[in-house]
Image 1: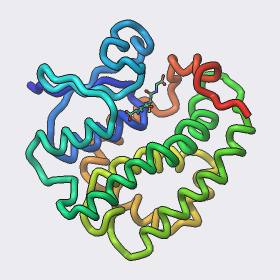
Image 2 (image 1 turned 45 degrees about the vertical axis):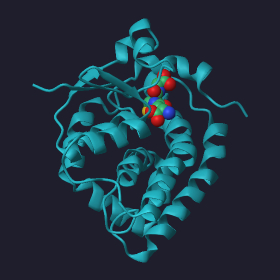
Image 3 (image 1 turned 120 degrees about the vertical axis):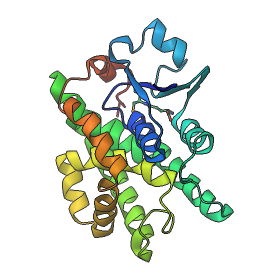
Length: 232
Ligand SMILES: N[C@@H](CCC(=O)N[C@@H](CS)C(=O)NCC(=O)O)C(=O)O
């Protein structure tokens, strides 16, 4: 019995950030698969911008992953995933903002859609979108590799923080694309960080939730070439 529900579609990068953080905190939750409702009235009632995830905790409903992540960390027991030191917390928030602004858009939204989501739906990939994304992704990977050069276990020193959980699903998506696999092969520190992250019991548990849905059509994405695809 739990009073926490995550709403979203199963392969969503942002949904999986929230599932990872809840699992890491030891918070039991139900998952409501919104796939058949995406874009409809019941979805809009939960998220006025028609995105996922949405978190319900009792009578409290919240959208936007950064807000949900901090709420979960602060509202529930379990080891804190936010540093107490102001500069380290700022660094964590820098990573979260960078994920939202630079990593997720080029890796998941552009490359991931063209290579992983559209082909399964029989939609021809737009190679121009891929070509524009790749150099942007290369910059992001160089930044991350450099930051990990200090020998720290995680993105903000040796404390596992929300930042690591924000980055993990996007890096996993990248690794599933042929271009991403090649780019990551040349980044040993990111590889070591991924091995560490993937071995966390929370990551193992969430991977098992997602696995049955990998490679299956995301039906509501049929409208994305018209609504979401960048035009160059
Ligand atoms: N700013 C939002 C972004 C969430 C987002 O873009 N989610 C994607 C899935 S990873 C989504 O809802 N896509 C559905 C759609 O656009 O139809 C957040 O941080 O939660």
